[in-house]
Amino acid sequence: MKDLSRNVTLYCNVCGNDQFSALDDELEDLMDASDTTKVICSDCGKIFTKAELLEENQEVINANLQDIQDEAIEEFNKELKRMFKKLR
Picture (cartoon, rainbow, N blue to C red):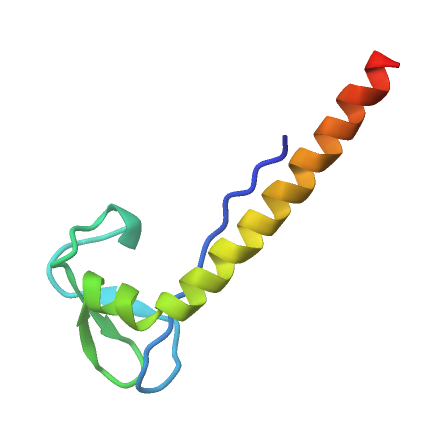
């Protein structure tokens, strides 16, 4: 089965920018940060915690999850068809 992982772009709820810098730590990936890690929007300067940023982007996250679910079901169905063809 193919890799269904995705990177989801998070957006500032004030200006719509997708570029953030960590305030507390030198951070390479927001995924590795704790929920209390503070980030700042590089455009408007709004400060968020990781948890707040995720909450503000829940709609985007849920849409991506739905896409992954749909793709996984499609891939699973293709794999089942291949398996049944081999049994004939």
